[in-house]
Image (tube, rainbow, N blue to C red; front, side, top):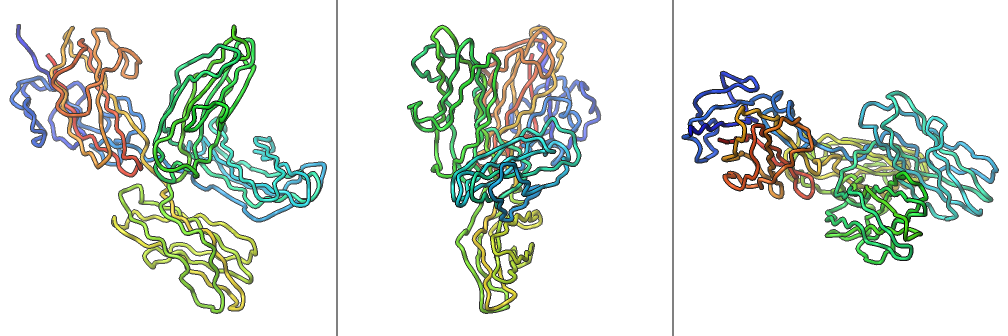
Length: 527
């Protein structure tokens, strides 16, 4: 039987080929990538050529970018929380039976970056019983908090804003005080793009009216301040009784749960819990989910268990309180050194604060060039978040310096916050699947899969393939994907055959999300 060998060439570089239409074929194959060093270069094959950015976008893309460096597939950038607007003045209101409006923030929703927002606020009560806050979006309450603490308690509320139209909105903060005075000094609005760390969204159930049952376990590695804030998304439903959930960290005792929920609902109730993870050491951590039901003849169900990173990535900080007085000249107060290491440092966020006895001034300088300055007469701290473009700076060490001065040499200027963040990381993973290629040959069998890649330290690219004699859509869930591993070339172990062929690549960044692998070319052989 005459064997035909077809090359599926997916070229993510600029290849000057005469036939560049999808599905174009050539009767004779010459390897276009001299560096590939594979053993197939002498084969005579028909050739399907995909060479342009548009060719790849005709496939299935997930968290990958084919446009920043046309001819390459890279992971997309994921922005960390970006400050939209704030009012961090220290305000208070006295005893009142009705809610008192203390702050209003106006902003404009503009595109998908606002699909999720985070609202930071705090509360304390002095010489009183309790204070309650009400956070209202366009006069509709979305969050409320109550505290009896005489020191500030901070809240980070996540709100799904995806169903709201683009346009102007107001965010208002009301306080109701039961005796004494209620205070607020933090009211900030962020857009967020959380990064999914790990998940198990299979549907599980538990029966038994007395015992907790371990149903799911998620293990991940904390790696720096990017993990200081986690969001745990779960759901729960019951059949005919009360369902209970308990989530532990690094513990097998459900009675030590850090998150717990219960519901009588027979349809899923979804929960998003914000977890302060800053006190946990870097390294491996395990979250366990336990379920139980109040009646052994009934069931408790869960189908969602996800861990999201929601923090910007801190690079360095100095949060000691310093002051300057006795001179009207600029005084160097703090120096932070960062090492720019790749494109995720092209933009940084510098957080600082300032308060004064008279008028205080600050100057933030990168390599001794001023990038931001602030002035205040406030006797309580005012917080600033400055976004600085470092895209034109070379990789390597750079200094971020904080200078301060006062308008009166007998009065002091104070600072207690100086932090540098990366504002973006690479997506935690990404995929690109080819179009489905109709070979025209029933029962076609794979011979080889070869790809060219660039892998910075800690990054990886792995492949899966599938085939069927029955047509299927490029994004269909079947036929099932079969792993082809992560080492090119792959010349054996193919278990599927069929007229219709498709490959899929998964790209994974390094642990810090600083670097992306790059996929340049894929070649697929079959007979």
